[in-house]
Length: 452
Image 1 (spheres, rainbow, N blue to C red):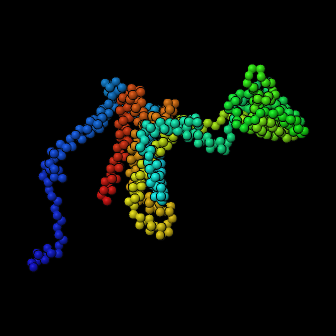
Image 2 (spheres, helix red, strand yellow):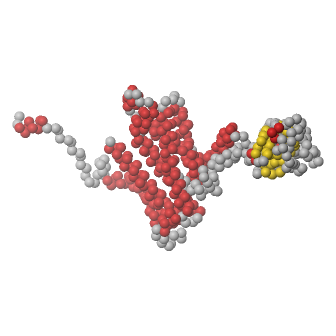
Image 3 (spheres, rainbow, N blue to C red):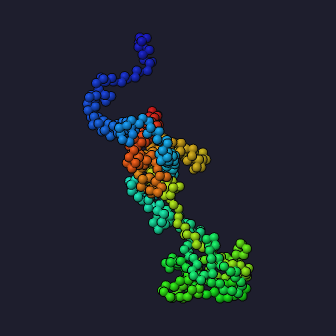
């Protein structure tokens, strides 16, 4: 064996050289001209549907509304001086911060919890179903959900039901003294003009409550009976249908009492006694009420609780974000569940064997391992909410649409409703500039994942 042969025997085999293709061929060995020919239809469509609109928008953003006068960067200055655009920009920031974070967090919770139940697949299907609904349909649905009328809007029906469970609403918002009534107005309520004394029977007639609005428990009004050492009386609906029927100031057989009406005895501005009327309108006050005046406080006549104005100026943006989360939490859940399925279970079991509880396993192992998936979901949703339009346009009523305004909606309004295509094009370019950094971050992250 020669020295050269011996040295060669101990050396590692040389790596095979990658084949070199002629410059006229692509990496796959296909002729470049053939590859370009097959790509040409897609390139033409890409240029017509993406490149040309972007270029035209950039050019159009430098001209005024007429399209003939060169405006330079005046349209871009309007992005930061126009009140409507600044409101839209502020709302877009809220959307980008809140909507993706809440959707991703709910998707993570749903994905983790559904792994532990037998009916997890059915639950995932239900949560993901809103993704099959268009933004238009979802907007119509939630416009009804957020309706102010509790008889129509589900949100207010639930809210009013919970409220009325703990706080009783007034049944007599329109009640007021009629003719020959001893009551006079007093800070939203009514008070007797003269003091009352024990052994006396007081009548407190009111009118103004429609018969179909009377409480279900109301019974026929009964005149109070005098009792020694006490003050008795009746408060009732002093009205009988039919002209000339019934007597004023006296309970008639067809007239109903005001059940639950609160009666207070007031002396020197202080409440010394109080009582609630029975179903027939009768009430009884103790001897401490002697010499006081009787008051029906304003709480008896406040308007019934009508829920929350979900689509008002202060809550319209959070309400619309809630509808977005309803749609996209299922999307986040499905992607995160796919990441969970590929997670090595040995690490989870090893942590449990070492004494970690479920919260520690979730926080220190599950979430770090899912970080790439969570980043994909969050970035995807951020890009999506930057161009949100449909939900805001449909759900927000005209009275509060300015408060719910976002950049995509403002682009539509400037371009079509206000005939300012130059500013609309500037908003479009600005939106593109906002999306590009997020897209670049996503592309770089994906390339790092491929290298691993």
